[in-house]
Image (cartoon, rainbow, N blue to C red; front, top):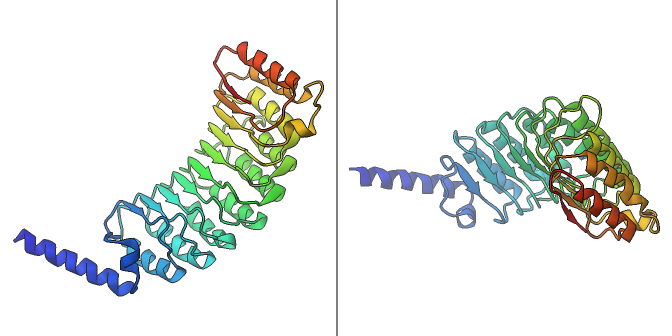
Length: 305
């Protein structure tokens, strides 16, 4: 009587789920949180108390691989529940937490993230993460052995946070698996940009980073110069976005000084495939120098102005 067994299992599942919260069933739908490998709870309006109930269910899941909690807004009070999920699900590979107003709650996540061996993708964009919180988070992330894709965009943690990330990158160089780093709109400024570029260009650095998003960080010409220096010795980076960073506005608009150092670096570097310099008001001289350098490369380069 397989059909009867199926009905019993479904009935048990329904009773278990509806007993957790009166509104949870209507919010998340018919998802067996204890057995599903991929759970999409994006934009469900989940509160912190409901996250506690979901964490209890997911803690029994021995095969969870992907969890999307984007855009729920459960705040820092929901962070302990997420930490419980991370600790209880060693098979978890992808975790999306963007737009949840976590703020200092990310500190609660730090220890759980640092000891997780399977996590490959972590997105924490737009969570109002400040400089002190991102420092703790960056230190923990540096210990995560399998992390490949990290999105911290739209968290205005500023230069202090940028330097903290740079220190984490430098300390984890030999063991890091990180391939993609998104720091779009994090206000790292010139100081943070220089620190990050230096962390990726020091002697003996063995990073695997293939893509860095530094869009809208007001790095200026000094930040550009630091990335140019980094590119001279880097052999892994394939995509670099420095879009909307006031490079031309703060640099020499007549001689194109901003483009000269980068042009020299592009001729030396043979790994970069895409370079985005849009919305920087570069001078004609800088643009010409970069185009000429790109044409002389053995490896094709897509330049965006």
